[in-house]
Image (cartoon, rainbow, N blue to C red; front, side, top):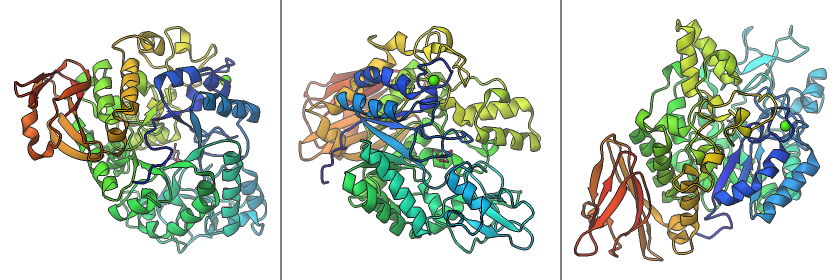
Amino acid sequence: MEPKWWHGKVAYQIYPKSFCDSNGDGIGDLKGIISKLDYLQALGIDILWLSPIYPSPFVDQGYDIADYENIEPLFGNLDDFDHLVAAAKERNIDVIMDLVANHCSDQHPWFKKACADLNSEEAGYFYFVKGKNGKVPNNLRSYFGGSVWDHIPGHEDEDIFYSHYFAKGQPDLNWYNPKLREQVYKFTNFWLQRGVKGFRVDAILSIVKDLSFPDLPPDDTDGMCHAANMNARNLHQIGPFLNELKAKTFTPADSFTVGEVLTVTPESVKDFAGANGYFSTLFDLSAREKVESFPHYRMFPNLLPDDFAQCVFDTQDLNQKVDAFVAPIIENHDEPRGLSYYMPDYLQNAVGAKTIATFLMGLRGIPFIYQGQEIGMTNTAFQSIDEFDDLYAKNEYRDMLEHGYTPEQAVASCARHGRDNARTPMLWDDSANAGFTTGKPWMRVHQDYKTLNVKNQFGVLGSTFSYYQDLIKLRKAPEYAHVFTYGSFERVMIDQGLIAYLRTDKETEQQLLVIINTRKDSCTYDLSALGDKRVCKHQPQVLISANEATLSVKADGVDGIINLGCGGAMIVAL
Ligand code: GLC
Ligand code: CA
């Protein structure tokens, strides 16, 4: 694999609205982020992804952009942004932005002009489509529920609609129009010229459409079909768009890009993230995809650690086969907390936080840590629908009531599956509002903030935070960086909560075993069970471990037995 500047890095995602508020208005901001750069440097991260900070009406929390070349006033201004990029650089941290180019906001001047004049140039930036048989053009259901079609504002009595795969306030941009594409490249380069090192690319599969707008077979009793199914059908069309985007923006700037791409197939992963892929890497969203392949919260299955590991292992294999570099995660701003979602209930705590951290940080690729994960944040105990902000959760709540569930059941489901779990304020200390703001936070604070916070963990031996620090240090230590970055991945087992994999580097003749026990009971693992998989026969050495995990080396100095308590986790050099 040809080395790239971003190989071997560790990335961190900030959700700006909930990270740190510097002026007491209850909303996180850029100055707040700047004040925490020392914290991020201490954690050891190299790349910082900021979820959208552009001017927005916040219908979908900033993923509805009203001006692509400016900063949302609630977050600060362009000077603050330049200051943030420079201050991060001083700490060897590169900033990447969120590129949201499938849709803009209905408050963007393009959309306003388009609605005011259906023959304007801007009207061609959108999908304005005539209805069929007195109905909307097709039966696609948007990602957040309801039809993807709505009447064009100001034209409510006419038989013409605009497409929005997400919220009503997020009209889809028409990538088939070269003028629109030029606009996208312009604003992308605007940020690259300002010192941004790359992008996380939002919802990008949705840019391909079938311009005949056919119906798809319904996937629920509402007669509709989830728009994601249309993306899967149209995937083969995306190449020319993304190659052009790459050539006109990412390549000249040597940027690092990570795609939000679901429904990757073995064939497409190479095109997306192989050596000449459209992007540097793709998130591993396979576990979430498995859950979200069901159209509604009420149908979402519960995943066990084994299911999660299965998804991750499949993704590792898939990427490795085509020399692609994946970005493993346990959570992001669209998901509940990984600790609550993928760990059994007895490990949804500080013990389990280290277990899942070990599993994640040993994987092949560029791991992303989501704010609060490094202190072991769990889901928030939401009590009523009023505590939610996310329109997706609110739609699902309504859907459950319509299907005969009680309000309590519907709230419980939103609390389990909802994206707002990731969006409650970062927990800095045990003072009011967890030190996130001196004002009233825009979103309720996690119930455990008195004990679960950065202040309790920073510099504290044995804390989740310190453990993440150690894992990152280990990954980047000169002796092990090569095997962690380029070593091959091989699954060893997924056995009722006992999970293990190998990382092997032929070049440096190194081999690592990563093993976790998510069972309630302790268990042992005899290294001799590795059989032929073990290619390095040095004296085994524990590089890091947590939760009652020990290794006893046998008399031959090569074999050994690993003992793991509940949640036990270990990385061993073989
Ligand atoms: C992506 C974002 C999500 C947003 C959606 C629409 O999935 O991660 O937060 O709601 O795109 O932009
Ligand atoms: Ca603020």
